[in-house]
Every structure is written in structure tokens, then in C-alpha cells.
Image 1: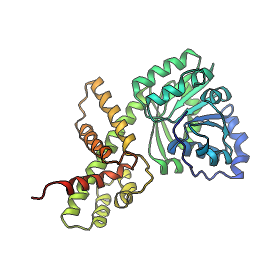
Image 2 (image 1 turned 135 degrees about the horizontal axis):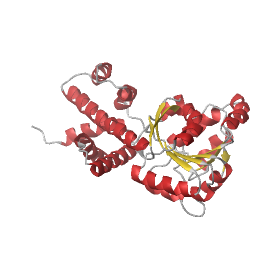
Image 3 (image 1 turned 90 degrees about the vertical axis):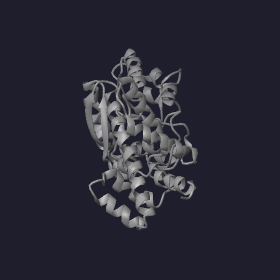
Image 4 (image 1 turned 180 degrees about the horizontal axis):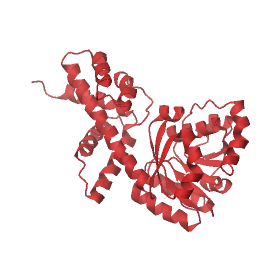
Length: 321
């Protein structure tokens, strides 16, 4: 019932399996992971490689075969995952999927109980997350929103930036696990981790769009594209995100680190949150328009770096002057 799994590379080994009992003891037992797609699958893989006992569930078991081979204990429903562990992670694409996985007779809420913790690393709306946290509280559990900044390479390297909202005591229990994935920071109450992530993701979209615009301008001025990209990313505008995506812009891969569709979902959440808080977000609105163009052109599942190719196609289609 999670996202469609990929085949993450996790580097789990016999040595890592031998560490699992000790690592699980530190957390009070095994941990659960629901949603084993590109991000969630690689997170689960990293936890397995670190020696944690992980119980998992996703939309399809087929895509989780490598994880199962590396020690993941498959469960057939989100409820079974929640019943078998004290700490449950979810990595899901949007509010609707999280609601579907959380609710019903086979949902997460049906398997939670006193003293358990639900850690949602998805990027969903702060308002929905707060409402779900209240429902989690009614069954005696705590919920943390713990969205991440970074893509698959950062998951695999354990260098994600993780913003956490929710109960401080619950955060203390899961912090050692989060540190296997990156650098967590407790931001404040439920929903505030998500609000900060949306603030960061505005810049992610806007930076990529601005870089694509500048690179296309240089390219059409007759400057070697690779030379221009290298100089731009080495200049003061070269953020870690742009430097990491430089080669993706020059040679767009079929497999996305962070696809256009998910990026627009996050920008839409940011725009909605801005309206609720009466905060103008003009650059986010401009990025949203170009992301709409990209999706209409068939780039929804391509990486955010595709914005350069989309802009180039728009320029080529423009009437000659």
C-alpha cells in the first residue's frame, strides 16, 4: 500500500546482519518501514546495512525482493508492520496515499498502540500531518513529521538533512535511527518540520529553473554548454544541489533523483501554505508555471534537471525573429 518499490542498492552484508540484534536493542526492538520506493527503499536499505531489524510493506512485494534478500522482514499490510514494531517509518508520495495507508482495518492506526512512534519522512501538507498526528495521539502513540532534504545519492551516503516536528521525547527515541540517514534537527511542534522543508524546496525548484535559464542563455550565445555549466557551478551561484545536478543537466538520465511531478507537488504545497499564512511566494509561482509546462511536455517522471531541456524545447518552438 506504499509507493511502488525500486531496487535500492544497500550494501548490506553478513557483518551488517550480525550487528542487527545489538542495533535493534538500542531502539527497544525492530523498526518498521512502509513505502519502499526510490527514497523509502534506499532508507530501509541503509538501516538494514547498519544492522537494524526492519519489517517492511509496500504496494508491491516484487520490487522489494533485494531488500528481502538483505534481511527485510516482509509484512502484508501496514497494520501488520505497526503491530510488530515500536517505531514505524512511512515514506509516501502525498496526503491521499498516506491517508489510505493510515486508515481502515489494515491501516497503520489499527496497529499502533500505547508508547509507539510513527515517523513520517514524506513531504505532505503540514495541515494534514497535524490532523493525522492528533489521530495517532488518540491511540496512545506519538507522531513525528520528519521530511528530508536530499535525493537518492544523499540517502545512500547518509547525508540527508532531516527536519523534525513533534514531541521532543519521541524525537529523542528516534534520533539515533535518523542519524543513520543524515543530520536531524528538531524544529518544533507537529507540522513545523514540513513547513521548513517546503521553504527549502521552494529554493530547490527556483534554483534549478534559474540555472537552466542562465545555461540556455549562455548556450544560445554560442558558449560551449559544458564549459558554461562548469563555470556557473564553480561560481558563487553553485549550490551543492546545482553542483550535484550539473551532469544530469548535460546528460539527462532516465531515472530521476527527484522527479518533476513530485517537485510540483511540493511547490503546490508551499503555495497553499503561503496562502494560509498570507505570505507572497512569487518565485515559487513562476517555478510552478514552468513545472506545469514540463509535465504537459511529458517530463513528469524525469528529474528536475530536465527543466533545461524543457526550456530549450520552448525556445526552439518560438517563432524566429
